[in-house]
Image (cartoon, rainbow, N blue to C red; front, side, top):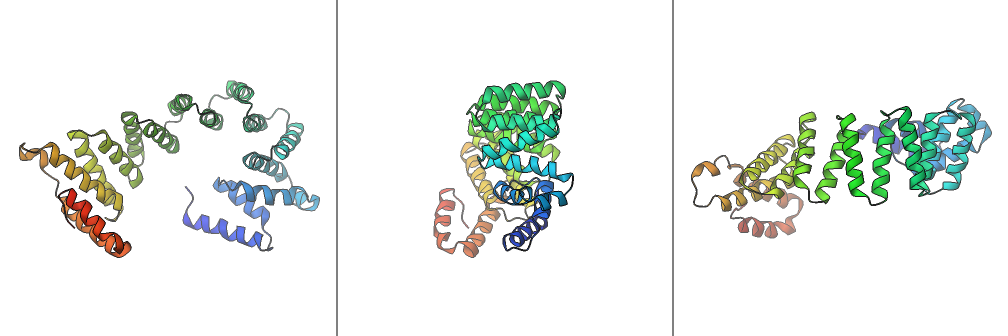
Length: 302
């Protein structure tokens, strides 16, 4: 994840280059280091170096890294003619390179030649079955073709090998949610919380899934994870505050007429309603009446 400082640094360099202050190579190096996807600018600034023999010779052997970076950006920008030319240059320079072979497979993918791309990726995996980029490209290729079941299959296979890839777990969870496969999504968020317990986004997403699943046990669990989201964000997460109110109302409806044990430890609802009232008065005063109406319908008040 890119920090605010790093993002500001990239933006400053971008502004400097745009205003004629130079720094194209420094910008390209930083974008590559931070793994940012700014394809239009990478293509624009990269071409300004590659098309100038003096600038190209100044970066020495890094010229070939730049060819690779610009070729990938050209695919992103649908400049497949440029991408094809630069992949050809790299293949002539490094005919046995698996890295260039991967780039060539990406070009086939960008051209919509799915079968050829799949064959190329399979061939590369025979030489190195632990190449994470190729596994991820297979997922992306399945999604690009609308083959969601295929994307799920490839993601699961990828996660059998690379179990600590948080982005992959999150992507799989989001696919499951889009398909209303909430139990499977819940499992993915459990894995994320186990590996990164201090990230409120995962607690919130898990609580949302549990609330959607419904049932008394899931609602109690959702309540706890909305509460942990509030705790991790200093008590100021609007969605989690609403989640506490919704869970409390739903639990109250399901336990009506039962003993008090099912309703214990739900004291956060009045505090959440109060916090929402203060938040709306500060940030959206014109919607305070709407909030009050919503809370009344949940038998709460701010």
